Structure formats: structure tokens, C-alpha cells
Image (tube, rainbow, N blue to C red; front, side, top):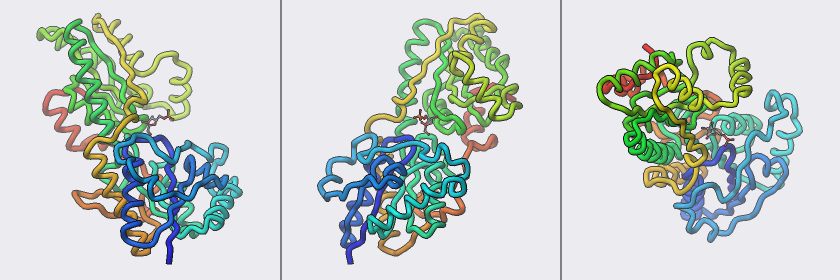
Length: 357
Ligand code: F6P
């Protein structure tokens, strides 16, 4: 009996999406009689019934390709305050299209928001399997998401390149790294790039402490400093604010966090400072070898789950083992950097400052 597998990619893209799609498809074609339906632009395509029946050849040559061949979209539920309650029609539409496409299951590649909806669809009776992707690495239940290591490589390359120009000019360079809620990317690339200061949302900083680090380096004959700052980093005052208040303050400011910190350091420490924002470059291009392997592992595991009739789960890496967690246990649970995480301790032990005690 032919199995019809729907695949969609939702939320912000990241390197490794196509490698994971290919992994699912190749393993499924290999293991059982398969037809794959590619749903366009994430949940938008599922809501609107926008899809294509895929040909085997479409999964060829995409291992190294960045982005997603299926397209993606963010927040199709923007006007839906409580998913599943306020605008039941969108959920009903997704269920109806799942039926109309005669799907046996749906493989959903995405981050936290995407997994929430995947869990909802699973609770609504659809056969769903989640695959955890995001450069933020903030999905609960998996040690790593695919896309993360590539972004670490890119952000590290940015820091390396900034290092040489910082050193030549004797400047303080503030590099703004993606990650609004979670600081994993900043933490890893900051360590890999040899940053002097790492600021992440989970550890609110004091600008005076940051300035002291820069001054101490200058006094020790180091004319330059490198700061790796997560876009969602916040100082102690902001940390006391309610989330909405903080967001409104940020939105009203013409400066991003790195620009603000660079200006403050010029004032307080009297150094010449520059802000650098690599932005979406961190999400673009070909996946690293690590992510090609991880995406393939995740995709193949999803196909194995389909073969075995196991649904309502999300694939995960735990230790060195590829496994899966119930969607109900992990969906919507953010994985932030614990302030006592070993990597934080390791960074502190080599003298990296977090701008806080
Ligand atoms: O979730 C991945 C991510 O790149 C975050 O690090 C970042 O805050 C956000 O997406 C940017 O979103 P957008 O692509 O919608 O601007």
C-alpha cells in the first residue's frame, strides 16, 4: 500500500532544511512505497491547500542547498490569539486539506511556534512528526537543532574577521548575533571566536561591568575588545520590565542593542567602538558538514517512524543518539541557556565576562 507523506517547512528558514527533506524522502522511497506531497510556504499552504505532488528527482541535488525548496512562512495564526480556540476555521481548513490530500502523515520541519501547531494538529487526530530546526537551538528535548552549527560557523567567521580589523584600529567591536530569547548561538560563537565579553538574554548585564572589562584590557596593553552580543540581550533594568514594556522600549529606539552598547562604551570607557550586525547572513547558504549529517539523521529517523507507524512525536538528538519525544511534552517549551550551564562556566573560567557577577 502506497503511503502519502506530506512535508512542510515553517517559521524562519535555516541551513539543513533541504538536507532533512531529502533524508525523509530518500529513506521513505528506500523503505516503502511512497508518494510525497510538498506543501508550499509552511502552514499557509496547508490552510489554503497549496501543494504539489513531488517527483523523486526533486529531492536530488538539494543536500547542500540553503533555504527550503518548499518555501516557508511565519505566523499564519497572527490574528489567532489562542491557537485552536479563537479561529477554529484555520485548524479545520488544515484538517480538511490533510484529508483532501489523502495524507497518511505529515512531517513538519520547524522551531518552537511550528511545534506548538504540530502538537495541536496531532491532538486533532492527524499523524504528525516534527523535525527540530532553528539556528537558535532553543527547542526543548533535543541537544541540538539542525541549522545551529552552521550558524555558529558563520557567526564565528564574522567574529574572526572583525578581530583583525578591531586589532588594526584598536577599536571595540560589538557584534550582534541572532537569538532573541536564547543565547546559545552567541555563547557558542563567542567562545569559538575568542570574544572578551558575551552578553545573552538569560544573563542580564550591567554596562558599567562591560566598560570595566574594556578598560582593563586597554590598561593591560590590549587596545581592542570583541563583544558578542545576542540581539535579545538586556541590561538589569530592562530585565525588571514586563516583556511588553521592554519590547515597546526597544521598538521606540532607533538603535539596535549592539549600536546602543557601542555608543555607551564610547561614552563610559572613552574607546572608539563600532557595531556590526551580520543579521540574516547567519541563516543563509549551504549547511555545514555537521548539519548535513544531523539533518540527514533526523530525516531518516522520521521515515523510520513513518514505517513503524509512530506519530505525535518530534525527532531529537540526545547524547549521541537520534531518538524522539512526544510532541505534547516538548511543544512550545523554550530551551534557554541555564545560567549555571557548563558552557557558561567554561567561558567564565577562561576569563570571558558576561557583564554580570
Ligand atoms: O528564529 C530564528 C531567528 O533567526 C532568530 O534568531 C531571529 O530573532 C529571528 O529568527 C528573525 O526573524 P525574521 O527572519 O522573521 O526577521
